[in-house]
Image: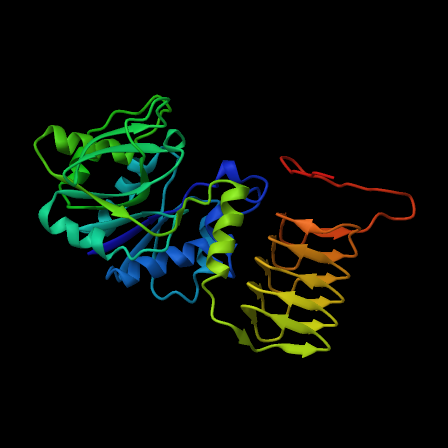
Length: 345
């Protein structure tokens, strides 16, 4: 079985975090989303994995997956939908069964049941019960079989969201190739499953019980970060000086914690520095980041960011790469806010 990850999109709902990089490369509890996708496919038995990229996303996706073994990168020339992205990979798939992963999703559960369900079906769709189904594509399931699929219905027929993972046999690609563009002008892969059903085929639904997120918004990203932080194994590989650690804390090699209090779960990346600060819980601090005279919790600080002496506690904050957060200067409060940024003061 082949593995295929779709990662050509930028993630407009995650702006401004995704303004300068693909959302799939954002770190969640220290691990890029795309790397978690590769690991999930490999754990399910899909060793030969392709990643569909765009011209603007490929370089960074290659960089963050360097330690993830052999991967095949496939260029999608235009953003014409998930179905068209799958068709771009047709040569790579070589007529084999495929485990398809929409690359911005995060799963706690193993994907093995999705692969196993394909033995008795033409295709498989992963679903998950959600409290707000009107925000998702809603699957209508009867007796374990998919009967319908409606995108963001105003009056959902159920609470099962299609959650970004599929398996399919080679013949499904013919159904994808026959699709007409949607109202958005895109070829939508899930619609091919309805074509399979209409032709008398079987599409099984596998329900996930554990944590799932599509990391679509900053709030989603913070919730995913908190979840995966709580799954870490405590580790101290850095330097601790006159500081106190409590709870689940990971301090990576080269990191320094000086005159600080850290309350887990917290991940402190390689070569990060915490100085005279109170950090956590549910906070990740990226590689080479610097926090000094800072109180922060429930937040994400990305690589090379600098946070120095803010005048208030930082909560539910996402601080991007190379960003600078500090105290007001002697001339007062200053904001340098880029396009689509958010500030609540």
